[in-house]
Image (cartoon, rainbow, N blue to C red; front, side):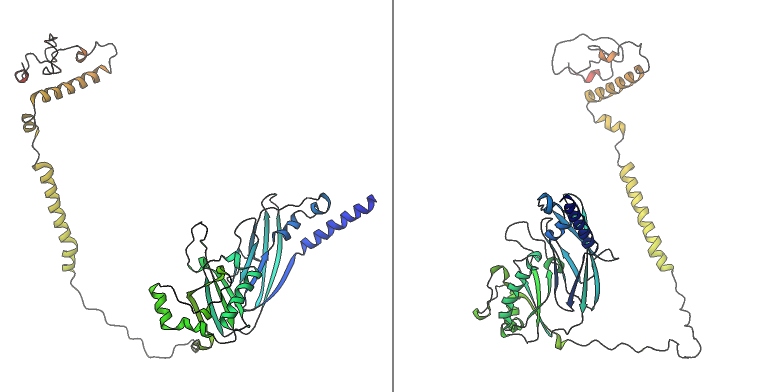
Length: 398
């Protein structure tokens, strides 16, 4: 019994390794039709924990992020896009191939819990097919791209547009996020959505409801910003979130598109013989002195005038030290000189640590005669330093 279990375990491991090594998915899509492929997290979860579900009985729901690129290229092809809103959401590859051919896409799934990685190969083969002649593009305001890509939601939108077009032969050609078309990022609040553009095509010509978009009245209402009045027979919105914005509806008639101009004929690449080369004559001489005067002399004269004006302001209008001292209050001027003297005294003491205390620290003294002056009362009219036998003493209050 133990031997059977060992063989079963060995076969399971070999099978898992074989399928992981050959995890290649092939898809065929016609050119001009919408291609969508959903990256299921459950599918990749089996690659990360292949034996835990069988023997340990543990089921994981790990967050995953997907990275997609074209094989041997750093990014996806131009027509293919990828979206995944959250690590707990499935991813979507979507787009419309524009030319037939085979495209190999590498899909890497990274487990955010265990940091394991799984690699799958998606082979997309685009086949040539006739392009439908009539196309219409609608803007759905209350939708986001990852909510529209599931097939069930596409069927709901397609069912409403079939009624609007009045035909069952309708194909979804392309779905584009409004942000990829220059739309603004919505506020992170309830009721605000990015919006999506849905383009459909059909063999049948446009219905009367769709042709109302081309009328002058409809364009006038949209230009004025007023609410477009939709007739009751043209309102086929079964789900409010799938309702279209009429002012952003566009119709495309591919049968009336102008053909591309023919390519120019290709010559032999040899210029025809046109005779000898005749060089142009030399231009007439020109006097550059007026330009020199305007460019050099005039700015130089202006610079000299500005320098003279600045010199007059800086030096010619200064009042001078004598005039300034004569207009200054004598007590204030004496205190100013005393402060300068005390500063010089402290600077001289800084180099001699054994010097006596500065005279400016004595209670009241005459800085010129070095005599201490007796206090004559505490009055606000007495200056900070009393001057005795000083040329400014006559100005002190008595």
